[in-house]
Length: 277
Picture 1 (cartoon, rainbow, N blue to C red):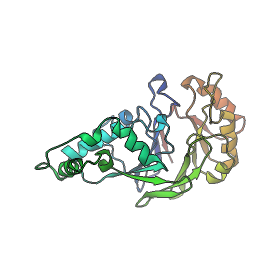
Picture 2 (spheres, rainbow, N blue to C red):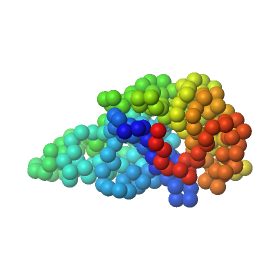
Picture 3 (cartoon, rainbow, N blue to C red):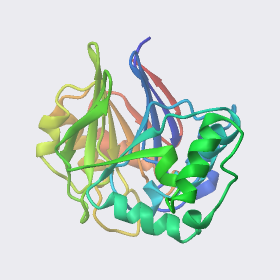
Picture 4 (cartoon, rainbow, N blue to C red):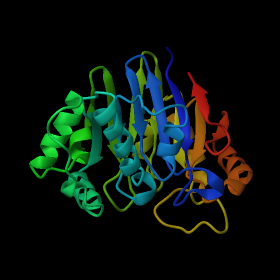
């Protein structure tokens, strides 16, 4: 199958106008990987059934609008273990410090204190019950959590994600997925960074942070739409997708600003959800 991207959400900071925060489902010949898991993403991912059908999750950085729905997604995986017999943890790649972050986050809900009968039930249920009896957090059973440094490559099987450190004030990674002769690059949240153009060189689809998209954008370590267009032109990308806008209402003006610098097709993540290459 060709590589495809389903935008589950792209709102910056909070789920504006009912659209979830950052979450991009990339599918290719090797499987499916979710890039970021902000508020509302689990709802969008599970809209058509109880299983997430993912091969991995990759988190670009640990801000709440990119991570908070890891907990509801963990609950859906827990149901797979308890009811459907799942026994294989889902790989979850997080930046350095992510394991401690998730442990403290999960502890807010007392997950280590849960207990289940250790006799009977599916192998998955028995595995969860045993880990709980040993004082372990079941979230760390349903996820196989692995830390990476921005700049590392990681993946599962043939599904490889290349990363590049970007400028967002906390450890943050842009991500690139190549499949056959097609590629997708996700800038994550970042200020304008010329080295990102080399990382994204000649990509087919470049998802670019354009958060500083209007007069009322809250500011911070992001790009303007014009800067996003400039970076896309430097990378010689085929098409751009502007994401993480301050508000969806900024979409038309953001596209016009990016078009000053980038002459190819420009899409808005808040308007178009499906991309196939």
